[in-house]
Image 1 (cartoon, rainbow, N blue to C red):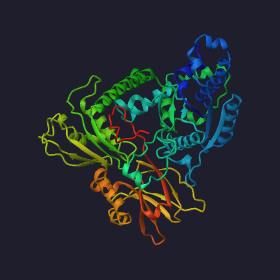
Image 2: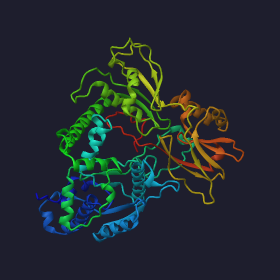
Image 3: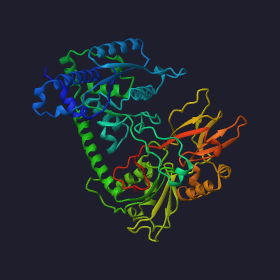
Image 4: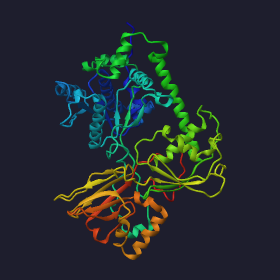
Length: 553
């Protein structure tokens, strides 16, 4: 039998772990995750030993600059298999013996669900697993989660995506690092939590100067340090280190999950050359290289777009897109693909949606980049349109819509429609008045409220009927300031996409108390309601945004 070398602990550290601030491990008990655990245990103990050796520093090794590393392991008990709780305890005992702090997390399934019998059990288990780990990371102040996915897992992922009909960018497989999945809308876990607490409720006099809303940062990232290692090396590592692991028999049942079925096929059959694991990994690497180059090309084009203003209080921006020529770029992507990426990047600044696929932007590209569609009929005067929950309104400065000097677009959240339920957050009352949890409103604003009013509150979109009633509760100077501000940053129906804090009486009647993103509130509510609000995390790589009108704090 051919000898397989184990993984050297410092190799793992130098590859990815050295720069991470606070680290956690997701441990299932299988050989993959236990190999990760034992290497992290070695790194944790070796660091102290080596840094206490004076000769180490004299050698000038780059390791001397690494900070002390500590790991916390999370073992998830899905609560589905008989004996799963005992197995989780056994895994935790092994980890604690190796010097790794360990927490067992149990998934609490809804009472009406029988998880083992659900056809989508695999996807639900994944969702609940990430959410329970994400919340645990937040509670322990951890923002980096290490997973033990390896090269064989990567090949299986590419195979599954081929079967699912994915094309180039979908065949990149799992990333070496990314945001934690399945945790959208959980503050401090997904795309948030990196900003220190800010003062609550700006005064009307602050509104006159109008600083921008704080933009969220942070969130937990996952890392896959084994993605370029074969599973056999992880087995060899556990054997070399004397690390115990636990086999999950369900992983060998080919009828249970698609991934199990693929593993069974590879184990039982000889695959065509094009579908061997090395071939699939080659596809992944080529697609990833192309994705990286396409990202750089997209950022270059974004840097040539003019984003004159982006107001976080209303979520409105003015943008003049780059003139695109219908050619194939050096990265092998045609201009329509790059234009789709550029348009998607702008949309993501404003959209209430978590994801926007470029495949859904085909008709919008024709409106924004008509120069790429020379075969169609001559361009007519452009009109407003909506896509992915975002409204584009043209601000035509010249008559030639296909000239290199492109028109400017006013981009905002699409006005709410009556056929779709409007977003809302309910804030109850309690004897002990305290801040509510951070909640994501309309996919754009993180908000929390201190409610001392004694009445239930709702955060919902500002309504047409609300405007006059709210305006007349304000003093004349404040009323005038609100009018001028809305005319400037939320003209027309855009103002009715703003969040408002509403008091609902026992009779069901509603009264607007505040427009929290703008800092306006009724005089009577000042002592009763306080709020903190932030704009969602933004990804602005390549963009040049007017620094005067956008805060990046």
